[in-house]
Length: 363
Image (tube, rainbow, N blue to C red):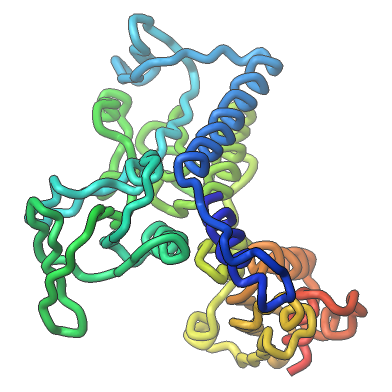
């Protein structure tokens, strides 16, 4: 959400390159940006509550704690149930760095209504990269290996093997999200934890407490919103109807919303070669795409990994404009069993960004 807003403002300020007059003065009202974000999130949450009510599902609000394998305390109520699905999500991590108390988490940062003048982000995962690219369009961002943080938010960091001192208005921690299991008393239900995550089998069922299932970040498998939705459905259906569906992430597209975005589905080239497959690779850069040139968005490429013998698509990776949407072409093709030549022979609308996906199938 924030990425799209700051990207829109940044592109508007470059409007003169496209022949737009008066666009250079476009700015960001950060208070309104955050207020809009909060309105949209609240609307989503309200919509989910209403959907549950329409299905006749009772919602109990409060902290849940196991009292026995089939019994939980939720607020001041005791609930007894046959099956349980744990989907408590995750929370931002706080690494053991001197001065960590002078930092904010990614969630706290996104509630601030004033845009910082200078920012240092700790962490190079998906959240750290997304925050970095978003704030680079609206402020200052540095991604570093941090040693310590002083009270005035001066960061001592290792950059290229050399210690540097960086001053910041805000230091944000984005070093992962451990699962929310503290206080649940999972031991009273017989649920086993592995490195803090709920251990589950292919049906998302606890092997030590068969009446308990888990989904989403709390399993520590795939910390992506679509993965949580998918696992939530599978866990609920298996809990209610018996274990009839195993989770399958072989064809599961993911995206990191950097600028431009990075998206992938299937295997990387290294993973495919490690399996001993006869690997073929196709590439097509966006700089050769007419639609990308018209939009002044020519950074990046599409990379296709396929089996040379059969033409089976093994993986597709996209760095470039609209990667988060274009990856679904590959995902649907892989799910449907289409071969490289099937996509290479398709006619596509010209000029479109999708053309780069199809062009990458030719090599």
